[in-house]
Image 1 (cartoon, rainbow, N blue to C red):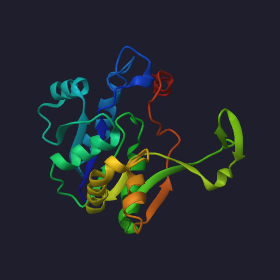
Image 2: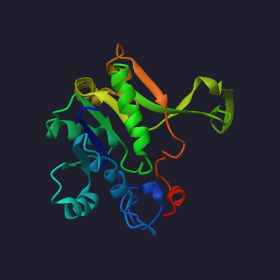
Image 3: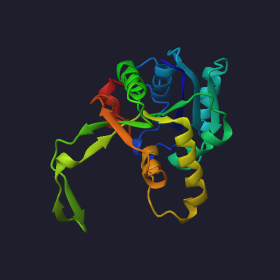
Length: 228
């Protein structure tokens, strides 16, 4: 495999976690915090050239003390939302690899198996963008004003995980377009691949099966999955 860069947005305020600790710094009964477990997946990979982490003051101070001697890690001051944090990471660093991954800081259960499978698939199929997805097994209904409007065909929908893989130039182009137009955008930017839909519609977004265990810690109850 060739070298790659990973961007980890980790500047959120952890509002929905409902705990006195920030969710990324939470360790419970574990030896490592959530953000440390996420970083470890890439820090121990010899093919990962650079880890760029968008941080707030709290997380940044913790990581600076923990990883001050790690040359692979670069900390960037993040912004109020995820998309602007990734934008800051792209603007303030020089990415030297042709492949860039974007991975949630709170998605600490990513396995090396899925990471490597995605990178291999990306290269073997000459992908430009690749995202991991899962089928929906519950019934999906559209709601408005607390009333059912429509029952959706669930086979037509998937849930999306990270890491999301991009040819670096395509990711940079999408974010450059976003920066120019963000003041006029009414869309909520849910993930990085959505910017490809908006600004690079000619680019195909390939998919690969994700893993059920590759969940993101959002609420305090999510941490129990990893026996925190």
